[in-house]
Length: 194
Image (cartoon, rainbow, N blue to C red; front, side):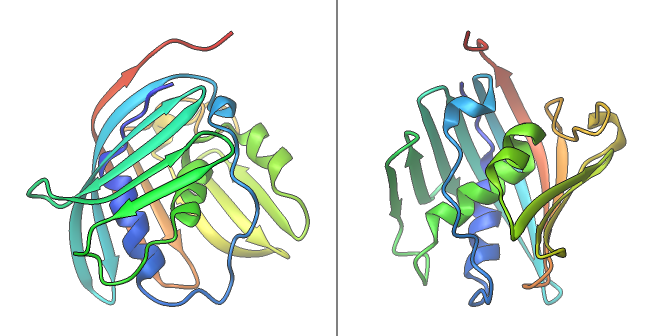
């Protein structure tokens, strides 16, 4: 599975390092195989916090045995590289980033936005839960919203917001007060594993 989600990675990284998190999502990552297809995508991210905006690029490749993420400045300088094979997580980051980016948290937010709803609901156990409506998906801790992902109405199929590949998505982290707008620039779908 190959998926390049260009801006998503960088914006998530900035969201996560903007301030210290009072609530960490310490559950294991889902296997790349649970995504169910191979995808490559390029995205532009617009990150907003405290009325300041930052534009970033990201690329992600999702294959059945590997998830790779690359975050870039708008000029193309690499800021972060994350790889996950379903068991081992590896991260490299540029000295341009002032603090260490929590790679696991970045991938967890990507999975919340794009992984199949059923896989997420089976993965997150109490006190965590994932709830979905036709245009929204929410990660909750003891009933309180932590992260909300909003999808365009055309991207939904029934209650599974990520049933189709979305051109745009909005991610709000309620504790940080951050908003991330993701615009897909290019997407290529590969084979669906058996």
